Image 1 (tube, one colour):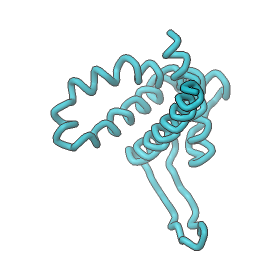
Image 2 (cartoon, rainbow, N blue to C red):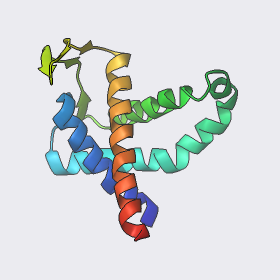
Image 3 (tube, rainbow, N blue to C red):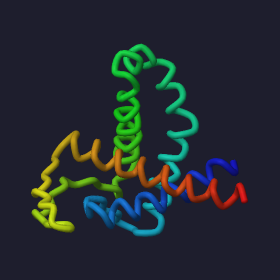
Image 4 (cartoon, rainbow, N blue to C red):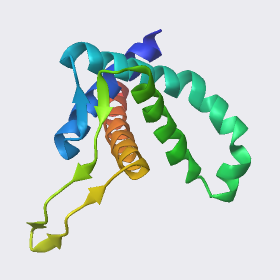
Amino acid sequence: MKKILKLTLLFTFSLITTNQIWGNLYFQTIPTSIIKTALVLGIFEIILKPILKIVLFPINLITLGLFRIVIDTLGLYLAVFLFNDFIITNINTQPTSFWGIAIPALNFSGFFTYLVTSITIGIILNFFNFIIRKKSSK
């Protein structure tokens, strides 16, 4: 139970941060739908993801572990499927320049929107997890 609550909190922060980066996550009722989505993603991470990793191990072995990203994307699909108040829209950015480096416009739609959002949530979740481990180990 403690692990589910910890993951729910981390996924809540990850969803909010990802929404600040891409702006493609829409929640109808802000606090409750974010928490419900984070709870579904946490339960998916604890219960369903290990089962999917075992079942899809041959594919994961052939792709050298890159298929795990698709498994994480399935968790995002599950959250959108279960709740009507959580919507993921296309990612459209404007071209920018960062420290003299030109960054072109990014446009993702369909499956690639879910994939990029899932990768972003995973990176931010691992970052928050790293911060918590650093604090607790001291």
